Length: 228
Ligand code: ADP
Picture 1 (cartoon, rainbow, N blue to C red):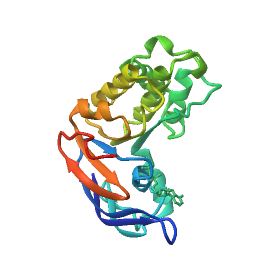
Picture 2 (picture 1 turned 90 degrees about the horizontal axis):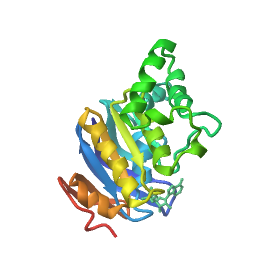
Picture 3 (picture 1 turned 60 degrees about the horizontal axis):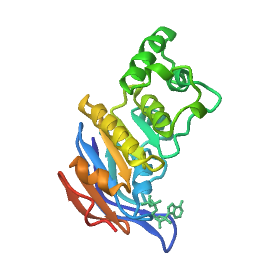
Picture 4 (picture 1 turned 60 degrees about the vertical axis):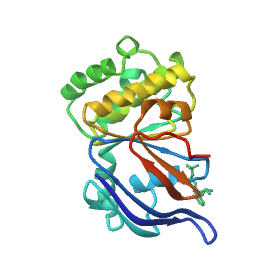
């Protein structure tokens, strides 16, 4: 699903954000990407979404070469990737239903399909009773559940979460990670960039550790351990 070989990302003369990254992520995997602030996590996620183009090396996602990808092909790539952010990024003046439905409307699916799928997805993330609430009427954990619903509503092959638990207390954070696990069990590849050491250790998933732009550890059922 993701194949990266000898990838370098350089933003300017002195700053090399990623160095010689070699990485294969298969369909259906659950992967944590950890490392200190500045280690290169966000840069790696931006490469997956083709928000930046690699300076050197190769990166393929869904079999597509992102170095050669044409600009008009980028929306297709991004439609197959659901994003979850630390700061939720919900539409504040719309209710839960609208926030999730909005992501479907932009892809041009039928009203009938939206009416069918939004309630099912909200049920999956445990928000059946909050459908008509606005984001400011929800707790942080509930807002992040809306984001999860929004990320999966178009049935992407992959969900990428960038510090999804950064604004949540530990118990709520675990709930969100459990939901991500459930989404993964249903067949979606899940990639989570995080600082949440305890949660990473508890989940016993594959852990890729970045340090100053390099992968210094990549273990199945790994722990946060080496990351500073
Ligand atoms: P992380 O997400 O692990 O905190 P980042 O990928 O954001 O790490 O950053 C990696 C390095 O690249 C940092 O040193 C950061 O300052 C630098 N960097 C990130 N984005 C840019 C940019 N747009 N221009 C220049 N340098 C950047």
